[in-house]
Length: 434
Image (cartoon, rainbow, N blue to C red):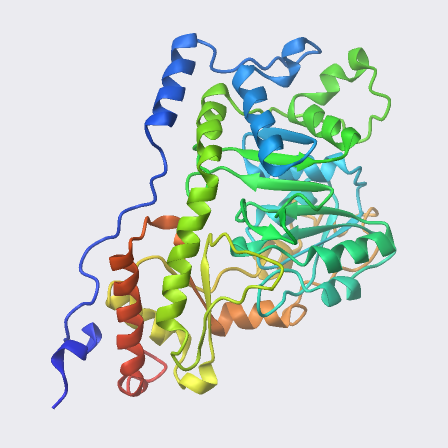
């Protein structure tokens, strides 16, 4: 007789997870006190968009940037109002020209690619590694042309990209590397922090990231000239270049990408806790892996020998042929059991309407149809087969960024997965149209 406790909720059995997990909440008394002090000071921002001692921001901005420099072991840290703003500033700071090509992953948040388009440069999508989901160096090499000027390496889900291989390619072809490390602060590669091995590294501080200041971002670099160009683009560059005696005017089109004193005060306190935030997620990931690794047809996260993982996401891959069931059925069964924060696929940027139709600025295909674009750029289905297969068939992610999980929560998640796997034969009877 079938054990009713093991019957799936879809088939009338008991739900495994009956309540919501605690949301991720990293703000404590220290951050509250830091904000109170800023509020009482009356100085919520001290930036001036003219050449002045306050061009670089107020006390908390500078303190936060100095703390980030010290923690990550870099010469320069530049705060910005979002990681998206940071990527835009980074592309401009490396001296990109209209029509230049920048190689980027299709398996990332859309801002990684739109930051390239912002400067009328051309995103070129290279495929990803099936294990880490980061840029595949071989695909990067295959996509280099005489017009390639940079690589945007994304440390997706918290695992660092292969910077050894990408740096060798960049050196060979005289390219710059920007590291989009929004999801990987605190992860290590060759004992260096993710984001610090590129010409520019970029981190996110928005509400579901490891460090949370509401909105915000941080750029890092060891290049003095690039650092100053980042600061100029952040704060109305065109208004100050004359008084500052800035000779190179390339991309000195400035913005208000400035981060306020309150956010920086919060960031100072959050940064002190980063090691604890990351180690807590690593403990959860280890417990998940211990509970799930032996389920047939389910691949738990792969971590390269020279890396650690910061686990913005806990990425899983299904072997659909081995399981004999389409992903969406597994996904719906897990959701029904109460597993919160699952994602069925992630994204394939090159298949978004903007790239398929090549319409960005205006309605006539600029920049792809203009004289600045050197060649016909392909965004058709099939150019990134690994990313496309993961998106359409096999990737199943757990959003570690959403919840504060304790051991009991993790054990319930594991129980739900194991319950679904013990019912695979019953799920097959539903058919793929379910």
